[in-house]
Every structure is written in C-alpha cells, then in structure tokens.
Length: 260
Length: 361
Ligand SMILES: Nc1ncnc2c1ncn2[C@@H]1O[C@H](COP(=O)(O)OP(=O)(O)OP(=O)(O)O)[C@@H](O)[C@H]1O
Ligand SMILES: [Mg+2]
Image 1 (cartoon, rainbow over the protein chains, first blue to last red):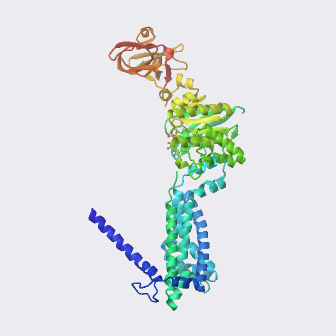
Image 2 (cartoon, each protein chain N blue to C red; image 1 turned 120 degrees about the vertical axis):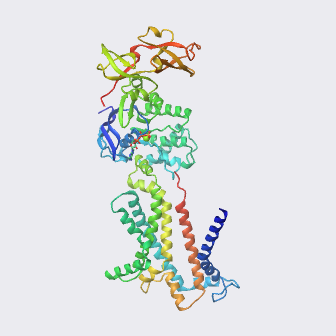
Image 3 (spheres, rainbow over the protein chains, first blue to last red; image 1 turned 45 degrees about the vertical axis):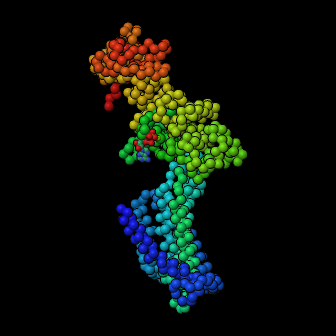
C-alpha cells in the first residue's frame, strides 16, 4: 500500500513538473538580465517589466483586453445565470438539449467556434471587430458561468424562498433579498472564470479581431513573430499571475461553505 | 361568515399516484387553537402548505375569513407559517430574520425594533440579535422561527411541529406562551403535532388524521372519551381493545362476543347483531380487586406484571380466555397492590367502554 502511494505521488509530481516547468521558466527568465533565453539565470533585474509597461502598444493592448474581458464576462454572467435558473428550476422537454447547446463551446474546438462565428458575421455582412470578439468571448465564457451557478442552485434550499414569500415578499423581492445573496458566490466565481478565459483567449480573438482590435495575447503573438524581446516574458508573467489568482479566488468562492 | 376563520371543503391533494390528503373538510373558528394530530406521513404538512399557498389542492376549496384562497398568492395571504424545517435565512442575522416580515410590510424602523425586541423577550433570546443563524442551537432556531412568524400578528398562524427540538421545560414554557398569545392577540392557531399530549393540553379542537383522512374532529375530551375509530382510540392515550362480533343489542346497550368473552357496552349509534365491532376500555376505567366482582363486566384473571409509576400503578392482567388487559390504578392510599401471580377479578360498567362498530371497507 505504501509503495502504491509513493508511486502515485511520484507520478503526480512528474505531471506537475511537466505542466509547470515551462511556465516557471518563463517567470524566471522574465527576471533575467540576459536578452536571450538562457538557463541558468546569471543575474536578476526587473527592467523588462518597466520596459513592458513603458511600451505604449503593450499598454494599449492590455487596456483593450481588459475592456473586452470585463464586458464579455458581465454579459456571460448575466446570460449564464439566467440560463442556469431556467435549467435548474424548470423541467421542460428540450432542457437537456438546451443545456448541451450552452455547454458546447467547451467541447467544440475553438477554431471551429471562431470560424462559425466568422462565417455567420460574413453572412450578415458584419465586419470583424470589437463586437464580434466580445460575442465570441461571451460564448466561451458561458459554459463556465452556467456550470458554477447551476452547482450553487442545486444546493439551494427552495423553502427559504417560500419562507420569504410567506412573510410577504413578492417574487422579485424574494429573488433580490434571498436567492441572489445566497447564490452570489457562485455568480462571482463564474464571472471570474469567464473573465479569465476571455482575458487569456487567443484563437477566437485572432480569427475575429480584424485589424484594429489588438488584445494582449494577440499582441504577444505578433511580437514573437517580428522581434523577440524579454518584455514578452515579463508581460506573460503578469498574465499568468492574474489568471492564476482569479482562478484561485473563483475556486474559493465556488467551494465556500454553504450555511444551512 | 363572521366567526369562522379557516374552512376546508372536500380538499384533496395528490402527488402523482400518492394521495397525501384525501377529501378533508373542517372549519376553524376565529381565535381557536386547532391541532392536526397524526402519525408521520399522514398529510399534516401538506394541509398547512395548501393553507399557506405553497401547494394547490387537486380538488376542493380553502377559505380564510370567508374568502376563497385558490387564486391568492402566498405573499398576499393573511397567514404565517412556521416551517417544519424552519427555513431561517442563513445569510441574515437573527434580528433581520425576525424583522423580515415587518420590513416587507413597510413598518417604520422604530416600530420594527419595538416589536422585534418584544419577541426577543418572549422567546428569551435577548442578546442574540446580531448572531448568525449557523451559530444557534436547534432549540434556539426553533424559537427564532416561531418569533419570525408571530411578530407579524397574522390572522392565522400555522405551526408545523414547532416545539420538537425543545427540552421538556422550555417546551412547556413555550406552550404556555403560545396559549397566552392565542388568548391575548386572538390569533387563530393551526398547530401540527404528532405528540398527543401536546395536542390534548393545548387545543380547543383536534383533528386526528391517518393516511390523508381526518378520522375524527372534536375537543380533547370528546376524542379521548369517545373515539369513533379504532385508530383514534389507539392513537390518543392507551386503551384495551376487545374485537369481536355483536351478539345482542337493544335499549342503548350491546354485547360484543370477543373470543369467548362477553363484553357489555353502551351503544349510542345503530348496530346490528353479527356486525364486527370493537370495544375500547381505557386502563384507568377498569377496577381491579375489591368491588370489581359486582360490576356488569366482571372477569377472573391473574396478575402478570406490575409497574409502579408514581401516581399510578399499572397492572397487566391475563384473563381466562388468554387475553391481557391493562389496568391503571390511582395510588391514593399507600400500596395495597397486588403481586404478580395473584388471582384477582377485574371489571367495569358498560358505560365505561366505547363501542366502535367496524365500518364497511
Ligand atoms: N412534494 C411531494 N411530492 C410527492 N409526495 C409528497 C410531496 N409532499 C408530500 N408527499 C407525500 O405526501 C404524504 C404526506 O406528507 P406530509 O409531509 O404532509 O406528511 P406529514 O403528516 O407532515 O408527516 P411528518 O409528521 O413526517 O412531517 C407523504 O406520503 C409524502 O411522502
Ligand atoms: Mg410534516
């Protein structure tokens, strides 16, 4: 038994090593004085960070990314929460089909989702651009919101809503004073996840962006293609840090103990 | 309709193939303390949920204050419900929980504070206002749930086993408080319990339920002294049941032949010879030993078992035909009891028993 456990741990360790070594390398090299990706790091500096944040294009791309992610996350949260309420609270014949439809962006390759949206836009003769990118990001954020909020709703004690109504609260007040506060951790967690997948997304943005929308992942990609600079490591490290923190927070929110 | 507050007429509730409530009718007078008493799963909660508007009757009509409630949403009904599983709001403080209903009705802050404070005195939880619900014991939660409903002074207060988690002393205290409120505020109480003692001590009127059916409605004395079904006789208090067939009847009396034992009993309703029937005799109505041989129903027996219970002593006596009867004797004088094995006589007059004819199935 002990050997078995040891082997399992070793295996898990190797998997983590495999997953995170490249990421660690990026973080380490972002602090290296060397202009080239060399290892081991000989001396340390933070200058790539100041250079990155001094680069107008990077800052502009960051701003665009933030704007898109916030708007997309808000829309995905609103739509996803309402959909979750609909799916959990009602049983109708097409429920499972509808749910599968909402979750499909998780399984369908992003490139196909992207191309589908693009053809759809062409069909409607809409130019690529901000709105299209946001629609794409809403689509990929929805399944996350739907899943997290649904989980919260399944654990929700409906008799609390009955108690509120018994005490004179109408449907809207009951939702506002009882349901919403109690599922809020789920909603917030879903919103953070939607924000993160939007902020990190490259493929859909790249396909739908057209020429004038430059998000940070797309910008990094173009930087690599033209000239390599350690600023890329610096900005990548920032993105890693933000993404990991947001996902941690959303996990905490989703797992927040349900009081009864 | 003046003095009738709640009325059910032919109310049936089916969940799929389960009939939870089966053609129930009763009316409750204004200010009355009405108990629904019955074993688990007999439909008590379902009735309360229909009165508060959370379930719609499959058939039948519910009226409150003479008004048909079928189209009235729960938040516009003049009722408040203390939920069986309490349903306190976990994200609000104790104070906010109790104040919820008053806030919904738009009372002023100071009025709310005054009324909520009164409640805290009543349920003896002063100083708990700012606690979270998760920081309370089961009994404390139960008291908060009662306060949350009571604070609204509803016309009809529905309570679903509200005192289950309290210890005996607190339970009796709360029972007295609820009775006091009923008298002072004039609220109509519909009280669900499966504790027959509680129902008997608190109620003006009791409906005994079984399997979705109301078996009998009456005041405590009526139900105890005059059970109309075997279920009621068994469920309320202890009793000895003699099952048999009616061998003769007339002039307000009947004899039931019960495995060779002829039991005479007063008969108020019509019975027929040969009909199956039971006679219910409460243990305290049976005499034992001295004087019991001159009674109309008098049988020889042997004491099997003696249990001293303080104010009473309870005997199990085996009769000649092999069946046991339980007899309870008041310990008015110092023990003149019988010991196991003693051959004695037991007996009772016909009017001490109750004849329960078996209904056609
Ligand atoms: N929503 C529902 N769906 C299906 N069956 C139900 C539902 N609610 C109640 N029942 C059934 O109806 C019957 C009566 O239930 P009810 O809750 O009224 O019983 P009760 O008398 O309150 O019992 P207890 O003393 O255990 O609380 C039970 O057989 C129960 O299983
Ligand atoms: Mg119940």
